Length: 186
Picture 1 (cartoon, rainbow, N blue to C red):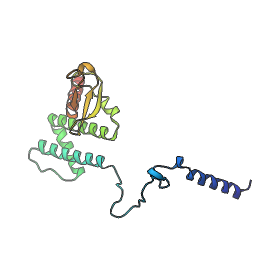
Picture 2 (picture 1 turned 180 degrees about the vertical axis):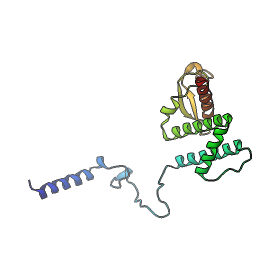
Picture 3 (picture 1 turned 60 degrees about the horizontal axis):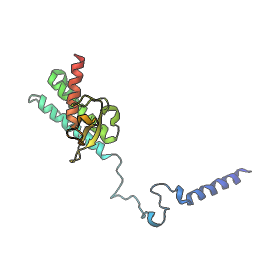
Picture 4 (picture 1 turned 90 degrees about the horizontal axis):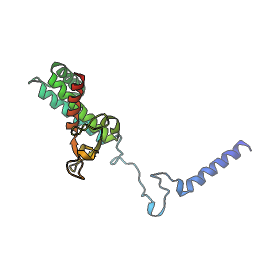
């Protein structure tokens, strides 16, 4: 079989596959009937979002939390602006005081847990924290009725009432983990 004949067969096969509705990909406009999508084109007024806005919001929340930390532990000193300058200033505050170090470690762990739960990768980080109530390795991420992230203990004897699992805030989990880590290290 010559090269042009092989090319024609491949092209014919590609057109045959493209015509088969089973192989239509998500977002394809070849679908008909109830699955038919309206003609969509990118425009200047409604371009697609280039990144995940929830992750961006988490980064902004962390910036605000570090700024509040700097105001809390800075003892009236002027807090620098800019992400890098603020992080360097927070690092110097952490080195100066044990209370600031504990507060900063809890702040970072709380935000790390929230970020991991948001992107769906909480098994690694939440699995390393014990339940503050029963000290079991049984925490899973859940949403509160207000929409915030929290941790739930899966152990039945840890439940607040029969059939109602114990829900712990991420700040409580972080506080317990940091203080327990320091107790073990001492």
